[in-house]
Amino acid sequence: MKKVIEKTVNLDLVGVNGNAFMIMGVFRRQAKKEGWSPKEIEQVMVEAKSGDYVHLLATIENHCEPKDENHDN
Image (cartoon, rainbow, N blue to C red; front, side, top):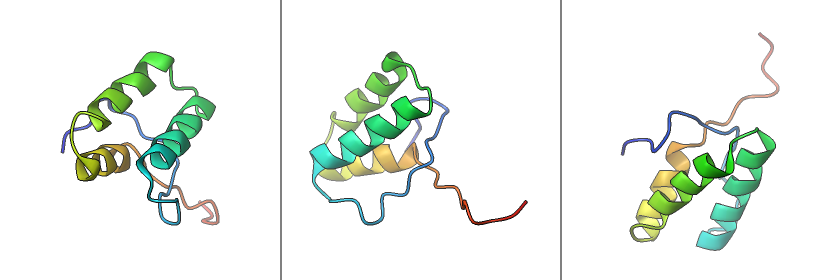
């Protein structure tokens, strides 16, 4: 699946309640925290909601890239 925008948030969805509204809310909060514009967030939300639950999950996951915060560089 293609990304709506070429950005990701530092978010791991493992352990997040599987409810679609919860997933969108967690993503939206993290994107806002990381400085995404309301337009960028809305573009991802519109695409995520344009299909079924599997499409929503795949779209959100495609814009998440968890960072290993315990990894020393």
